[in-house]
Every structure is written in structure tokens, then in C-alpha cells.
Image (cartoon, rainbow, N blue to C red; front, side, top):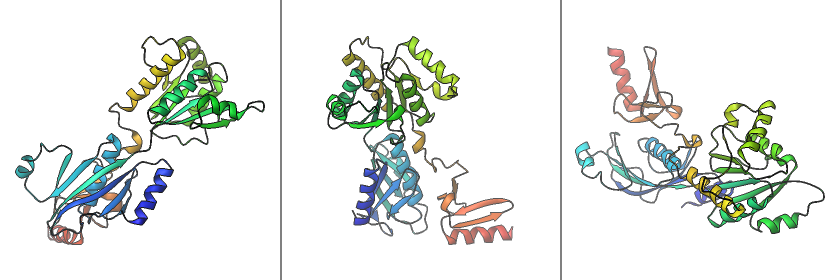
Length: 338
């Protein structure tokens, strides 16, 4: 991988941002993309690097965003072959086919590999159950942060010993979460158990949006209902209050702190592995029918990203978008002669 892309990848990993590495693995002349060419695609659709010209990039960005959404790699095959020829190969696992519509012809195989940060578990509170949950989540590959109330008499070393040396301990007044980067891979568990319940749950609700994948409160139904009603009176909107899962965890008959921790981690895994598509990774070029972000070149049929289209033409109050100047010129000639 080129040095500038390696540095870019390292920066993204350090910030726990998701991205996709695209690599050209095969080409058929004439093609501007060559085997070994690489690019990085971000969650907002921006592409850095080189994997081919204008015909390939919109397709690669579209599939990269889908790879971020489902977490699965795929091989994108862009080829001028006919539909019948493509159908004969459709049984190949993980291969997505697109027709090469550029006049130059050629073909490209591009492998897309999503690079996703570790899921991030944020535990608010220092309860024994929270300590057990932190260690369990760490052991199965989660990045874990524990947010605990900052008090002058507290000993930071004691908290680190309780949670473990590789757990990120954040001491914050009133459970302030401003130092936590909340993403679609952040899972919040309020496990205060009497030590700042209202403050912790309020902070968790204010820090996340309605698209939050998981927020649970370790409390009985009765206690949770009272605190949620209190927060409702404080102005927390119902749309957010409905996010709270209480009691926390799957109903497996858990009794001990260890069993409750297992049930909560199981519930987080269930949510994480569900088919729900995170809103953060919704593709800005997800469908050909999405008139706000994507259009079809009326001459060659290629899909064009409206947001960065260079060649466009307004005719009778409608904008048309083109993959190249040649297609635009042909369309203009037809439009002006009609």
C-alpha cells in the first residue's frame, strides 16, 4: 500500500473510524486501474487513492458503503460482458457484478475490505456487575471504557484494580460523556446501582441520538420507570426515553452479578449481529432511483454521482448528468436538434 494511504489508515484506526480498503486485483485492457492500485473509502463516501477512472469510482463507493453497513467484504466485478454471461457466474460467493458502460470497454475486479473499529462498550458506574461486564467484554474483543463519578476522596488506583489495567477509566463529574466519541458501534450500559442513577442515565440519553444501537439500565422495572419518568419531567424527549432497555440483558433467569453481566453482553451481541443497518453508514449513493444523489447517464447508461458530477446539462427544467464530456456533447446535440 502506498505510504500516504498507510498513514491515512493509521490515522483512521487511531480515531476508531471505519473505512474500506479497495484493491484492484485483476484488469482487462483497456483499463486505467491496474492490479495493486488501492484506495480508501470513508463512511461519507470520500475516496482517497486510485482504483480506476470515472466508470469505476461510483460503483466502488456504492459497494464500499454497503460493505461498511453489513461488515462483509466483497469482490466487485465491472465488465462489459452480457447479462447472460454474468448470470452463468452468479453462484460465485461474494461477487457483485456491474456492467462496464464506458466506451473504452475493459474490465476490473476490485476487492473491498471493510475495516471496522472494535465495538466500544461504555459502562457508567462502578458497580460489581459493571466491573464483571467490563472484563467479559474485554475478553471477547470489545474496547471498554468505564465512566465513574469524580470524587476527591476516591482512589483512582482502586478503580483501576477493580476494573482491570486495560480498561479505560474516565473520572467525570456527573458522568459527563463529552470525552467519549459516541458512534454506531458504541454500546452504553448504565450500571450505577444507586450511585448517581439519574445523572448517569440522563448523560447517556443526552449523549446519543435516536439511532443508538444499544442503551440499557441495570435496574428493576419499577425503579427504571420512576427514573425515566423523572427524566421525562426534565425534558428528555420520549423518542430518546424509548431507547432505554430496562431491566438490562436478555431474560435468561439471571440472578448473580456474573449471570446478569453475561445476559447483558449476550443482548449486546444480539443487537450488534442483527441485520439493522446503521444510519451512519447509509449509502449516499445507495440506489439508482435515489434522485438526490445519483443519476443515470442518458447516453451510455452509466451511474453518475450527482454530488461530484463534472459534466451536466439542464434541458427543459431538468438536470442531466454524464460520465464524460463525449456523452454530454451527444446529448446536447440531440436535445438542441429536437
